[in-house]
Length: 265
Length: 113
Image (cartoon, rainbow over all chains, first blue to last red; front, side, top):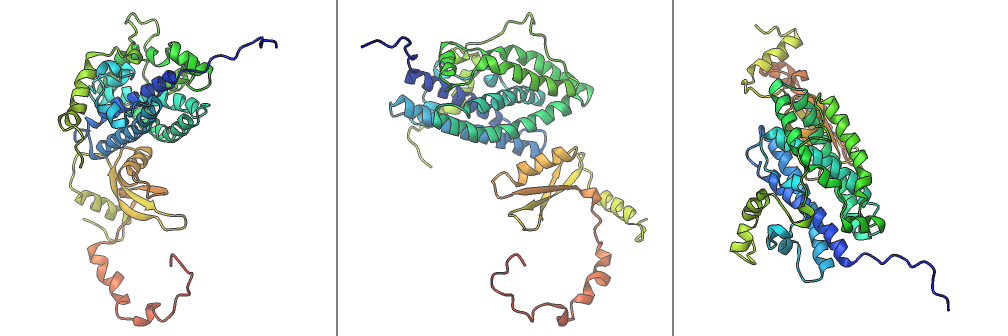
């Protein structure tokens, strides 16, 4: 009997799929929580409701992704256990989403950069060879398309608005730009998942993301920071190395669940 | 003074009676709940332009999935009857029972009438 000349690549370990679900889920859980901090504080009532809507959409997406993560992990943890009983080092969200809200322009710039990222990545994941993942992404993609329409409009309004709104949103872009390379950095896990057609090919999506961002930024009379900016690029979120801000966010998000374990209402 | 024969002035006068709240212009929102149903007035939102008004209307009045179509109209574009119009406009219909189509049976199967 002849041995096959080419061995098929080993299938990704279940661990890889779990990592992907946590990365996607934690991005949305953390950003959803950040947006919920605006509740009752937005500039006008309509925007207050809009931000809460986006927060709830993201929370719904996080629920689906983390529930699936718990199933794949197989240790009996559900989405609540993963949200409320992990420590900061166990979170796999990117650094962009954990940055504090700042002013309204900062929140909107952060949201816009993420929303475009969400649209291009969810579009790719909706064609995943993993059926459960593809279904979750397809559902989330519809919501993300509304989110980017909302945050994109605000980029135009603020950028092409008053001198003050322009200055503030340009400052936000300048400050947030160093968190964007992390979005498209592929470590070994991401590379294996992409090779299998399960996860998005992140480095390949960056050009499209950049094009979409650039189009709005240009129409908003804003300027994209230079790639060769001397400011160091920041990453580490996917490996659990977070900025100090995540710990404070989790303390507030998790305290009720941890103070009253198993409480129901 | 308002000139009752000048609709534009009448609208402007009405707009002036809305207390100035220092906010963006007001848009009236109309929602449609199912195919073929009329768009019904749902309320109003503040917004700077039509796209903004559409998004705010979506977020305030259509966020729970009960709406399939939205209209937004600048409130200032609406010409409304005034309180003084009530007599000449609406009284004549009140005492003529024969104007009401209540002597017919609506066939079964007719919906949305």
